[in-house]
Length: 194
Image (cartoon, rainbow, N blue to C red; front, side, top):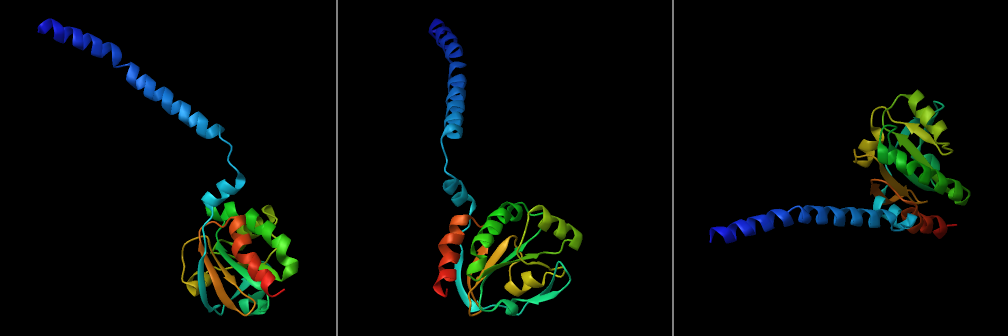
């Protein structure tokens, strides 16, 4: 009996290193397969993009200064489809979505669409540098007292709200917005009254 145990233990010691090595090789193979698999930009974007919530309420009364020191109001944009984007220069998802927002604005501005980027409290110089670095052509407002975050009742960044031509908030996002979501939800509002 003692000899059969010894043989079993010797056999077990010899096969034991084989199991972790096999599992390790399988994991490495799976990782390489996953990395090598083609992923479309749409799939990657969909994973990062948040789906908006449909809402319907009057846009808040909100007036803030822009980067040139002039006071602007949401009411000044009545008759346009407006996307209000609350963001900060230090916020990674805010930075990630900004090129998408800028491209969408460029393509749809002539159709009665505007984007108002409301920066949540950073110094004006930092916000101006960010706008320059990212080539932002849409209005950028400064919000040192979190007035916009309070008006919309959402302190998470980024958050965005789509206001239709009549002044009603129709969609709300918390998180990064992808191009497909803009096309699916905002473009029909732009086209509906054009």
